[in-house]
Length: 418
Image 1 (cartoon, helix red, strand yellow):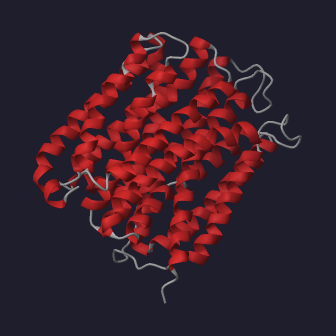
Image 2 (spheres, one colour):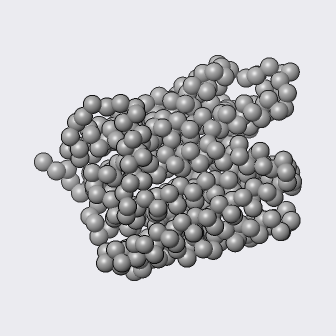
């Protein structure tokens, strides 16, 4: 017997909640791990460790979560196609909660290897962000898919707002005496544990979309590679991955740039990320409205055309507060673009491939999040504005790829009104 519509709405809420805090877990470490590693007073690493070595350790810690998320997303997506969304979501959300508790324990015990291990485990099971997208796509009627997928862009923006503030507030003992660097991770663990319980109670058991077969790691990545064989979405899927790399270079280098060039404090940086999130949320909200009246594929074309030119302004405008007037428009447009990609994939790919496509998309986002910090740091030695130029160039390449795909599929997109 099907559960009530109230349970269905609650299930969708939990799925968005999982997606939100999976993404927030990537951002929160920017606020917490830096003061844990960089100061010479740090108890996690020896006091005689050089600054260069500390930066390497910090970069590896930042990369640990998204790099295993890259591997975890397609694997969990494939497992959900084979064994059902609910089973894999329930297991992965419980293990994600455990990984956050392990992170908190590693900080309390000042155990750096355990901290790395907890981030690696947490990142792998955070691949369930893609399962949340696939599950929502399965649940909602086809006529409402565009709106529901656009809402993920809003939720993603909200997570970039929540992450820094959760990190900065709950790690500050000046606010409450027992707040410390471990507390935000206890909180995240409890949130995922609560979500796990709600999924057990509210989500309908679903049938696997594929017959069970012998599983192997190599097969998972063969399946991931098979996404690029889907003629109707292959080039658009590639464009979405390239876009994520260009965008994450901008996001990952903003904090080092503002800190090194204009001496922004941690509090000021959290305000910058919160400011970013406001325009991301507005963009996602507009996408929700516009997708009801306008084809998302064509709208995405215009967004991708203008984004690189606004980012390029960072190369030429050297003012301490330029970030506050340059970034709103590209952030607004990028939010719409991300929502467009999600909507396109949900419409153009068969249900049996939904877990695979969204797993692959989340995996590419995770890979971009892992590559971007080290890449931008490496090219920044040639000039602090070089990463912004690189971000702009990569996003312009995204536009070219997407334009070619759009012209190839224009008739098909028009016939489906997407």
